[in-house]
Image (cartoon, rainbow, N blue to C red; front, side, top):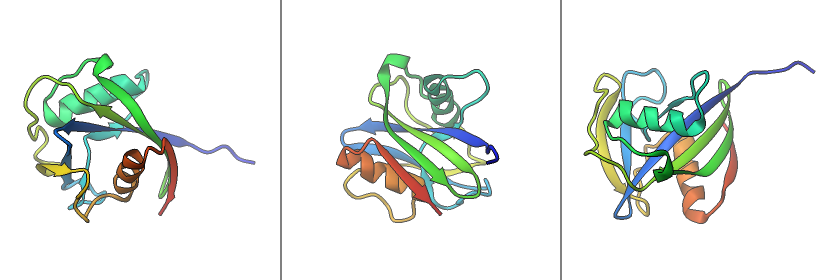
Length: 142
């Protein structure tokens, strides 16, 4: 059986007062117009935590410490590629979230975890539902 490539991605939930920060994707070629989280691929030599903190700073401008972030959900996702997605929660950070990548992000929006918008990327929609339900792992194919 042939080996295959798995891409590793991190997603960060900034959580404040029962709300999560969402980013509306724009001009990326992947699910533009849909809401997602600060996210990106893990780069060579990075840990999951390092990648999450880097993406958080690049996309929102906020800074957090490794001790402020924790993995809450893992997902094996099969779409055009195979992904190992890790969803991390951050409840403490420095700075006010801002749209640091306006060419890739149409807006930032705080949303209640209990009433999220319909137009969310499938992996984020499923992961958030699993996190609320206390499920640490899921799989998704689309």
